[in-house]
Length: 364
Image 1 (cartoon, helix red, strand yellow):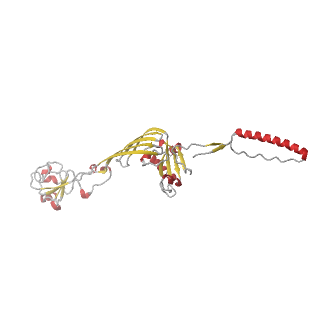
Image 2 (cartoon, one colour):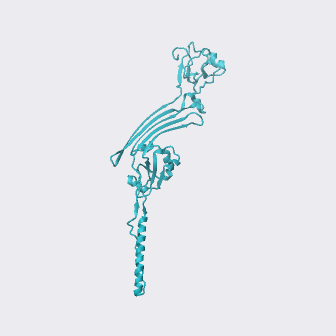
Image 3 (tube, one colour):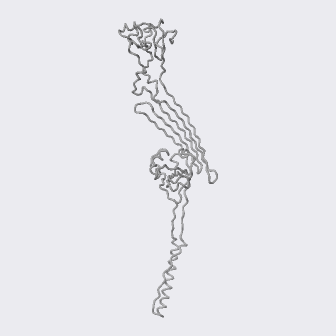
């Protein structure tokens, strides 16, 4: 804000006092002379006030980049006030100033950089908050001067004339149940030389996966899965009357024995009769995929002539997601009469065929 001060020159005051004293002495002498002739005293006319021609007027120069016009700003934040907010970046700073910058109608503010409109918010977000010398918050009536509707407030960010900085930021997070850790690293280099500025920001965000086995999730009983495999009768019927006789009741499903030699005998299927094998496939299925994202943002700004400025923004982003969808199931029909299988025609449900024999309908 421009301030005006009017100061009176002390030398002029001294000179005026001497003139008044001289005129007063002459008036007294004239009054004495009149008293001798007329016997009455004449009134002395008061001294005329000074014309003010000797006053000194001091004016201040406008701060470079300021957007203050005829109306005073609603608020002005200097470097100490900005640092007192404790924000680590400009996005956080804007959130903490929201109560001050929100208009009476509840609208978000518009933003200026050094008193001028920006091509995008990347010009502002790419600068560290340490590069800001002052922030001006203008009332809604000033928004029309910059081409905005007169229903929002204006925030003007004034940068330092000269600034050099390299900023490193790292953040780490985790979950209470384990897995899904978050790692974020950001490096920003900024340089400001008067109206010219250049910034470069590189960041990497990693989200670690969360496996189903890391959470208390029970396998779906309707979609049981076994690495060794289960054998079921065709059409839901009994697998083999001979196996029913050994067990003492009809057997519609049985687990494949782990011992390869037991798979060749009917008695090897008795222990797993009616009790299907179940394998927890949680370690093969991701609830949250692993995600890696790399971002690079660069901004170069410079004046074009005396009344224009230009800015070039470049952005690049690469993202990769990897995860596990579980093991693929398979259902095979195994014909009977094979030397390696003592059972008749059956249905095999597994990811790996339980039989190691070769032949039609089997998988080696």
